[in-house]
Image 1 (cartoon, rainbow over the protein chains, first blue to last red):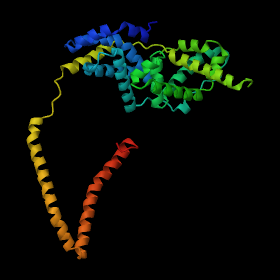
Image 2: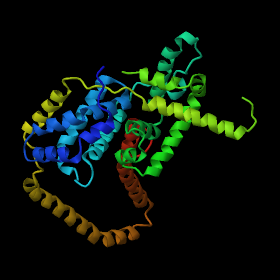
Image 3: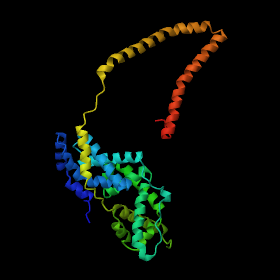
Image 4: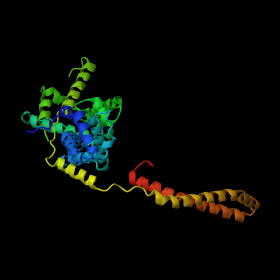
Length: 211
Length: 135
């Protein structure tokens, strides 16, 4: 199974030097140099978009739009910040506006499916379904709480990276994350049952789920 | 679950739920972009780079009529300010005539209505279009 590079590896691979060199070439008139930037960052941007909408084709459309906006505004990248920080912030802005324009087809939080009590032989399969229910419930959160959750886990639970992408103070992001978790915990009170029944079951179920 | 030390047990339960949430939301499979993604992006980028630059605002064509309109407005304002004392005198002289006063009041009312109607229509349209808020 081919797995897209994790975000941290992508960031390590796409350090400022190759990004800076590509950007300088693009600004010098070499349009094809932008393809290097797209190849380097297509994975993270598509994955970020997917977390926003959970629709593969829409995620690719949104990521495509983000790259085009990046192309238009490339000259506005201030070299003191990482290229990835600038790119993620731009992409988050594009995705946020796109979802305002055409909201995702999610059910309200109150109507999102609940984890069920299951017979033992179907537990693993249904835990995978339950995990997906939790992920979809994130999309049903109010926007001010949804985006911190999406970006926090996208950035591999790095609050400061999420705050930089959202261009918000870390304290604000932490507060919104705490509130979002409280809402999710209230919506899924049976999560404790998933955690308590088998050690590591939730992690196994989570790992098994792939788009 | 026995509520022996209720607070500690609630906290432990909350921490387990948070860990489960973390594991569920952090352990997502990664999506692989389609093979045509890069070419699709570059097609759009090349299209934009080949397009002619947007037209700038035609300031040179606009300044002459703009200056004329500004001059007319300024002249109208000056004339209005000049005629205000004379109009006030005239109104004071005719204040006793109720018919003149009523006519003046009707004119003021119709002007006020003509100014308020478009504003009201705009506010209603914004309300229907975007929901709460004026802007």
